[in-house]
Image: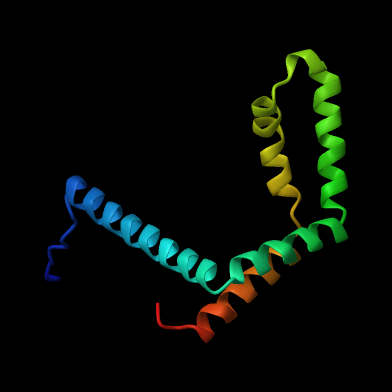
Length: 118
């Protein structure tokens, strides 16, 4: 007869605490990375690269056209800037080419590897 072993499964409250701790560590790491990027001026360089790449691939024109469509559909008097941002943001994010995302991620990784004192 096989030996049965008890597997320890954390209680839901313990699991929630573990998830919260991991999320807290993640947000602390993100904050530290962001701070390093700002201090070294890399954040601005990345933003400029992103702007150039988005213009180059036609993203800016596509999003501008989408904004015009939304305004035509709803009517200028019925659209606020907040409404427009809410409506356009998901499409804007989806339209960013994977190649642009990958290039930015590679640049961030290279920066972090070069400045690994985080």
